[in-house]
Image (cartoon, rainbow, N blue to C red; front, side):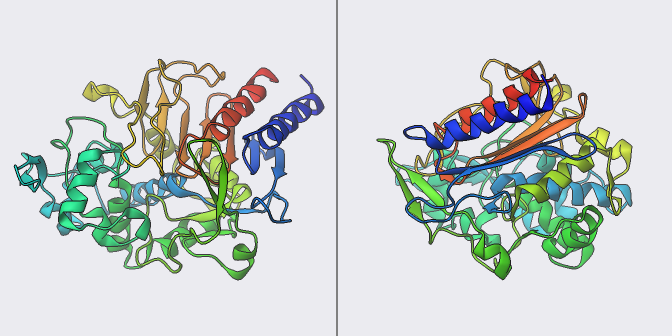
Length: 395
């Protein structure tokens, strides 16, 4: 398929996603190869009911697509010999050793806990095998937080990540606040806030400007409103739903705001084995290590999730039936996906229905951004799959 026909097909995916009944209010999507973006598109509106068209420079809450950038900061420390992945995380952030394993609840509903059999390692945090979770993906985690008055992670506080282990470290893949702890390790080693570290060591070399843990005035004027989808499918804009600005803590797991175009520069860095337009971010061998499934050798797999707060997330799984692992810090598909993504590619997503993939084999990647809760929205996620599929079918 020619580039013109591919562009037409991708434009149609965005239009269908935003114009059909029950569709997403607006979407920005881009795709890149190793040299630059070969598709940039925007459709719909930043907020239902307002005359604010979606544009390619619109600003999104990136949520968990923040994680890969934090993992990059960690791997820079590994390259420098400042930390080791196999060492206890408590060596760098002693507070993590206070976290206990949940051992059920007593008759009055109070949690019972015990010490873990071994310390959480940095590697456990990178692979989400520590036992830490999110309150919206575990009824037990939510119950524990309510019993101990631990705040929600969306409040962006250190107290929010000091919760409980749902299992022994290394026993299973459980998606949670691990990368926020890694952000604390980066801060402890660098002696400054995570955002400042990213600015110096990722944003600068890659020429990324419209991205950060807070919003500049320019970014604030282009911010996309998060919408709520009710059970009947109706969408309601939530213009007041924003992360704290400035945040009490730079949350390495979910705190960044940015444009899709800026994130594409990060994706291109991975495709180019760590090289950026203004300097190298990572060594090539580090990028290779970051893209390697770390669960396979442990006999573990990554899978789906079950919601415990339906307003935040639907229950679901990416490409159910396709075996999946986890790398640093990406989900990796162990077989070719139905959309055409080759085995051992990388992907992840953000809570308000942002999705990306990085295919180092073919040298392409993409990002699909909307702002809707709950996660894995009935219009946004299928649109992402159609977008990715159209790119592979057009090559």
